[in-house]
Length: 313
Image 1 (cartoon, rainbow, N blue to C red):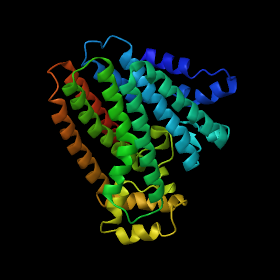
Image 2: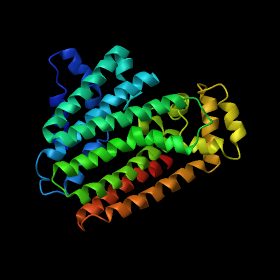
Image 3: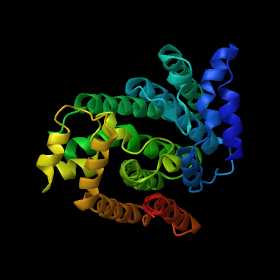
Image 4: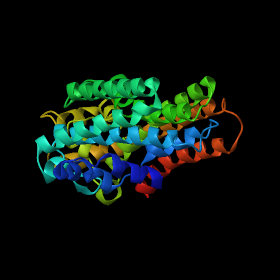
């Protein structure tokens, strides 16, 4: 992971110092680095795990992830990211868009030496991410959609990139096709859980814990799975009334929606569904060769839910 950090700094250095500062703004802010970590874990499946392929795969995927965050923050008019000012807030939207474009271009450059399949996978993944983002934009402030649309959004925006991290890590290390497919299926389920957990955290965690104010998704007009369940639940009429004027800006309204969502058991329902998806992921992992890798995968699964439990106290 030290190599990942150094490579992220190395490849985001532009000829223009201002562009370098913009491109490295979120890189230097840190982050969980879950995707490059997963690429290296998946690389343990292949005989070339000690080579640089899984590291480069993780760097490419992380660059796509960070570049997409620059664009997301422009769309959402976000002021903070990872506990720091967002690029658009620190400079302006133009700088954020150009910085995001630069990072996405560098992702393709990093992926190119990994082979045609790797470049194609990165491109397809970013296309899926864009589709998820567009669908989320279409649904913004709309309380009439349900879980199916929600899962289409997070599949494109989140799970596709996590799956690609695992798939590229295994691919570049020389894993077999069966192993690549199994770790990809595992990563898809874990990627869905990753976003479900983040959406729960947005409702229950403090700003210090997640680096942004609680209820940020609601304020942006994004109604995640727990809120969608609340809309369809016993307190649905009140929730709909609170959302009648679109995305709520009043902190008291946001707090009330969170209270109704938690009080109705909808957060617990999402946590239970996430746990069930992890059991599906474990079945995919069981198709991998018996090794210490399985315990590592279980630890990565546990990490996601442990964050939720820690935030809830």
